[in-house]
Image 1 (cartoon, one colour):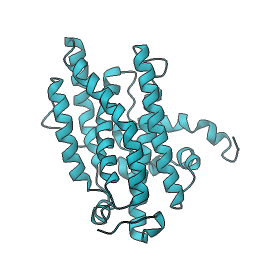
Image 2 (cartoon, one colour; image 1 turned 180 degrees about the vertical axis):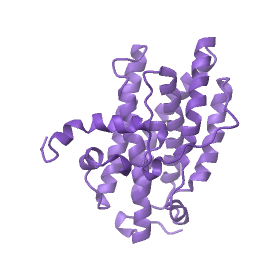
Image 3 (tube, helix red, strand yellow; image 1 turned 30 degrees about the vertical axis):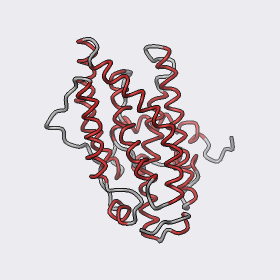
Image 4 (cartoon, helix red, strand yellow; image 1 turned 90 degrees about the vertical axis):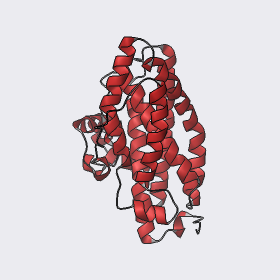
Length: 262
């Protein structure tokens, strides 16, 4: 399968598909990063305050890299893209959009579910035919492995901890698993991206994600409801009210004067 050495090697249909993919990657990363940053100064122990703040910074950095690549493809610059878009223009999954309402178990489970999916995506992209994206994916993967280590440590620890911690973690899994499946909502771009060797289709990634997550859930004595149905809509601009609230707060200063130079 032919490789594409530069972004300029993309024909019009494939360029559109790559833009769709990059928006999904970037929007997920910036919102999960924002959610993680909400724990700064509020985490239950200092170690986790530092860990969540650090991981949030990584995720936002990953988002910036994806937005920058979008800019190179003709999309708005990163600041305009993040602070200037309306709710229905965002392509993030509902998993990252939901408010944790300062529920530590919800935040841990959500972050682990996201990190497994993101790691699988980056690994696939790193082997893909679009060289600039493959190189970026390899770089970001080196940071993501520490996020996975964090989840691999805390999921079993709290799942098998006390009866209370197990109950809270199980509630988080029950609530968030359908939203996690929504990360693999297919779009019109998927088939073309797969055919071009840029990345596999969402259904393939979901199967890998389920197999990986099931291992840790089993170790943590946590179970998945057989009736879990994916929560879709995020990839086509349909979002929970929680995202509208987040964007309103996140974009407040920018919208006071979008022409201002900082």
